[in-house]
Each structure stands twice: as structure tokens, then as C-alpha cells.
Length: 133
Image (cartoon, rainbow, N blue to C red; front, side):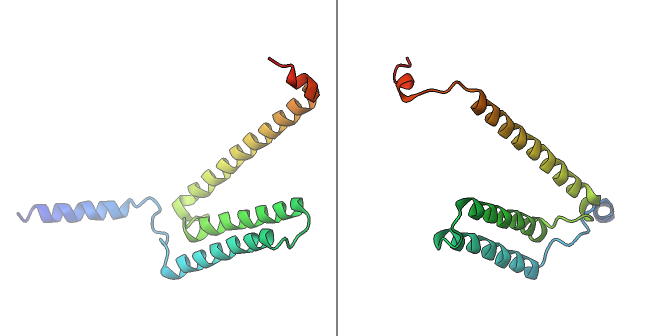
């Protein structure tokens, strides 16, 4: 019976020795509450901007909302996902940068294709559309 206890303790020590970068803080109640309050504020302000029509231009309103959304993404990553340059030896930050690069390529390529498809389509009048099969 006594031989199993040291083996179990050795396994726990080996597990803790190979923590693979999990030594970073997993968050405190203060960090979670800070993230929650910031996320609520970053949601309420764009809602107010739209509902009260504070900015007359819809395009400017959309840009402001996207800026608030980008800030909120950063708040979520820092306060809830605990991402920083030190966690996991920097691999999480590298994975995030790679993901953002792939998303940017996919979005810009999609917009480019849609723009050129729209520019190169044959114009159709309503009468032509009525006669389509």
C-alpha cells in the first residue's frame, strides 16, 4: 500500500514540472469583473449611438461601432482568455496573429471578387429580368 502513494506523488510532481506554460495567472475575481464591466460599457455605448441616432451618418456610425467591437475583442482576449505575449511561451499570440492574417486575406479576397463580379456583370433592366426563364 505504501508503494502507491510515492508513485502518485511523483506523477503529480512530473505533471507540475511539465505544465507547458500554465504558470500564468488564470484570472482573479477583479480581472473578471473588470472585463465584464468593460464589455458591458463597450456594448452599451454603440447601442446608445444607434438608438439615439447621435451620429447622423450611417457610415460613420458603422465605423465607430466596428472600432468599439475591435476594442471589445481585445478586452475579451485579455480579461477572459488571459492572452498575452508570455502565456504559452508566446504561441497563443503567434496563433492569434496568424488567424488574423488568414481572416484578412479571406475577407479582402472575398470583397475583391464581389467587387469585380459586380463591375463585370452585364447590366439588366427590370424588363430583361421579367423575361428570364
